Image (spheres, rainbow, N blue to C red):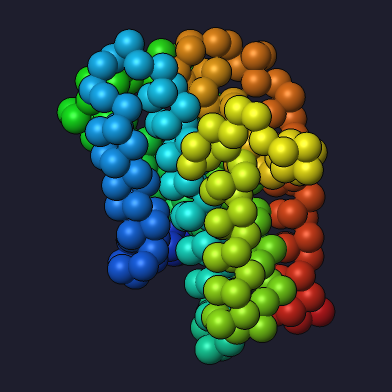
Length: 251
């Protein structure tokens, strides 16, 4: 039991480091959203009465989680499959379940770091208040992290190499960034865009975070968003784990 716990903690630490060691991953996981806050915050003004921050901060939090889950993990897993790293890992006593648990813990730890850095940065520069409903914020960030990670693991198990994963994740990231209400509010979008938006995960992440983080509403106010994101995470995780077991578990 002690050996298993030590192995899990070491794998979790390794997975966490992978989220910031790569310079491109570090840029999108942390620096790009902060840059967006600095630019748009300067345009909106530093007034705490400005409701633009109620959209800007949750939107950039969604971007951070999406980058760490979809982009970083999708590309990293595809690269590790291509190079044989995952095959080597799963030839050891490390199980698919143990690897997945370490991956989840690492991404949740990164989500905490991202949330603290984002709000501290916004508060320092523009006087933005901290989340008004901390327990609710923890719930919506948890579910959003799992949803983002499930997308990344799905890509990682399907893409044939790092190049293919990059070709999948970056267009998907840009679509979810701009059409998911994360980069900027689309108040009166064309009919086609308005019909697409409810099917984009970041649309629900941003809406749920805005209600709970910035407006102080209860978790029940984001029940629809949480339900949809949870269902998506469960389905994508199940498929990704099924793929991993078929690829690496010897029967």
